[in-house]
Length: 329
Image 1 (tube, one colour):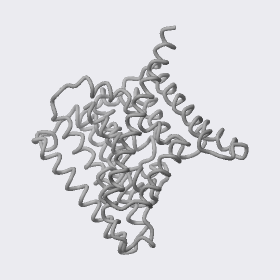
Image 2 (cartoon, one colour):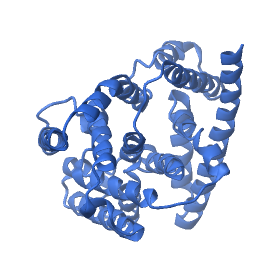
Image 3 (spheres, helix red, strand yellow):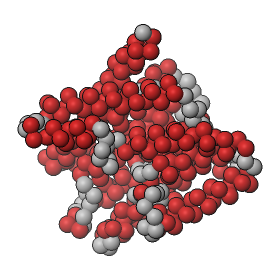
Image 4 (spheres, helix red, strand yellow):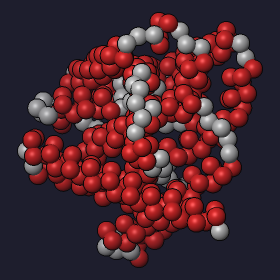
């Protein structure tokens, strides 16, 4: 499952290298040959956030002040690295200090949005755990059914409420957390007792289905509608993420290297999605995409992602060193 934590963060890089860096396909892109591969890449990687939250629910969050403090220290560490990147890449500093301060204080809606939502989940985890530990299976299932019916209808099919925010919300994180806890604590034979290749097949099949469906809707000219298929609260995406989680739950092996990397996997997101890191990351991906042919583009983007991955892990090891020194002293 630690391997899954790493893979989930790799998928975060991939999903950001597609529709975030290159922009959501618009009406002007209809008919381009490279659109279908982009839709499939997005569909295979869009499970990244749901998977990471489901993984938290699989093990359960145990609220600890020192763990919360470490998370804040990690975020601050990479925010300061973002400041360094900003000074190296922004030419006119004087006109941008106000923007820099706003990003440092996380005033923007998209400034580390995942961190904001995850902290809310973390803060409410004792309450969620108390519910899980004291309710009956029937009560638990009833709450889940009502939650996901409401989320699907009011947050995905319609825009009846805003707090689901297409899955970019702490409310949706709580639902995923409880869903994963239910699957782990109340395993059902129809869900959990299959060979690992069954779950891989479900993941691939749903990814292809969702990608092709979104592409068909896109070329039909329904631009606003196809985007809904890539929301984190799309039921197909959630089921796809569950299948991905259960596939990795069937793998049995141990690796010190994987554990060593997994401890720092969250740094991958924090580095390339900081206010300045995002500009460099998206700008580099976009420049490669516009300049090179398909094969060369894929190769160079892959090399770039590997560089970001390794750099993130190594920087976080430095962060861990400072954190241990701070705690001990």
